[in-house]
Length: 334
Ligand code: P6P
Image 1 (cartoon, rainbow, N blue to C red):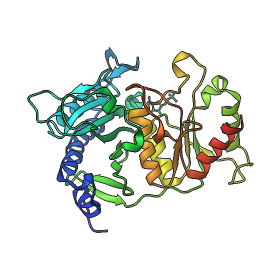
Image 2: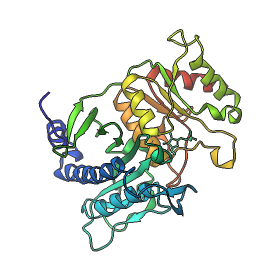
Image 3: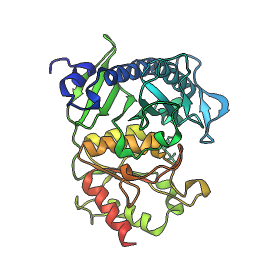
Image 4: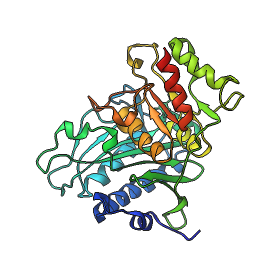
């Protein structure tokens, strides 16, 4: 395959749409630079003292790991200078991130999880950066929160970087899903997976079964379906769960399967599940639908949910089309 860079791919495949401007290509290239910097630190995390805790607690009430903080600051530092954004929101920041007046403002909004799966950093398990891009709805003036709280179906682009055995970037602008692999020797992301389509029927299910006792009966019935021979495979699905959403999602995207993070009754915080609508569920839902899959909260399409707040959590069932439809059918019966 000829070596196609992200920029070439964007120019090759841009339909006449708001995405056809060079500004979006510039935005994605800024994001790529931030990801290369994060990838460099992640790949040498074992060698320098960036492991361990900063001792601070983030908005999610989780202890912030140094690499989390580093990734967050790299993204904010780089993207606020891009001249393309009017606001940002990070999973690590309680409030909207304003673009300082000294920088040129644009009409895109960037929402991101700087380093998802961070609980795995110290044990060398893959982590990732997830991003979601909207255009602002007002012509100009200070960005209002409701411009950020748009339905996922309004995203103009979304995707993730996966820092694993290789560093990958997977994204969509609504014109299919494309995967690029970083060639560290030249520092370029080169096209490695063109037009990714996920199998309609999976063979893998991904869920933290440790919470079995906290699930309601319909959820137990859903999980039991995938472990039984009553499914379309006529045999139990393989269980694969490494506790890093981007990695679990990416594996299932390529091989076919379903990732489930239901609500549970462990405590009041989990009655809407653990994963965040804006910086996790929405971007991955855009990707999976463009790859022929589906994403629901148990009943409703993720991309149709009207957000109420920045850090809103949502139950997530995402992956192969027929597997997600089965989840919807089983929950619909209860
Ligand atoms: P649990 C990582 O902290 C994360 O946000 C996702 O990357 C991952 O899928 C999930 O939480 C794991 O959660 O409750 O199974 O440990």
